[in-house]
Image 1 (cartoon, rainbow, N blue to C red):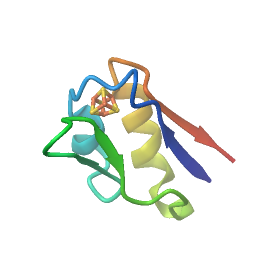
Image 2 (image 1 turned 120 degrees about the horizontal axis):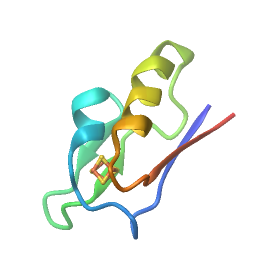
Image 3 (image 1 turned 90 degrees about the vertical axis):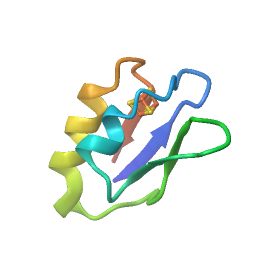
Image 4 (image 1 turned 180 degrees about the vertical axis):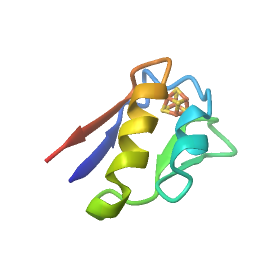
Length: 64
Ligand code: SF4
């Protein structure tokens, strides 16, 4: 599983960080998402799917 973020679309709403803090962070300078794990384990899939669903900007994507 790979996680990708569209930084053009990201508006720094932080919902992804709430859903999966292991995987997402916010850059203090840009206020955009940082993907801390580009290839996270399957054990985190549920949280990441929740993060993808919760992003108001639809900036996150999972590819297998
Ligand atoms: S929820 Fe979406 S818009 Fe908000 S910080 Fe995360 S990726 Fe960016």
